[in-house]
Length: 138
Image (tube, rainbow, N blue to C red; front, side, top):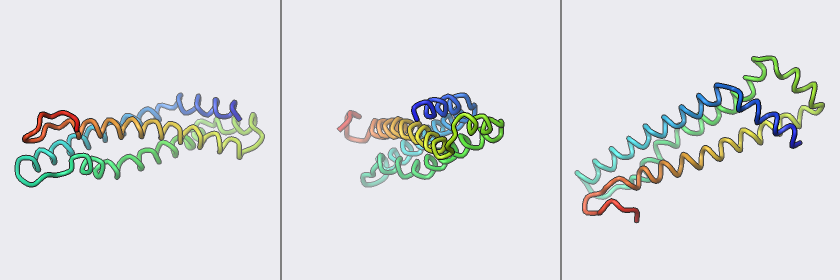
């Protein structure tokens, strides 16, 4: 099973589309952070309170699952498009092992990238200076 996971990791790493999807997730984070910053600045200037963290996470909740789903689809379809699936099924006799290894690798990459993106969004939206505060973390 470890050999199957290692081969799936190598295949996912060698696809250019994996990097494109992760880069578009990062750009979606940047747009979300900017929107969170703009909304919190508006609330600070014009009205009562506001929750910049909740606002930012509300915006990003729409983009990230779709992009991580695309990562999973591209991990599978890239192998079929290149014809590498024949070699994969020849070397690994059980197709269930291949599917389990591929799901493990994609889920691991999505979990790590999701945690990094969530922390970056949190620190971006919390570090917005609010009126009457010093801009430090609470």
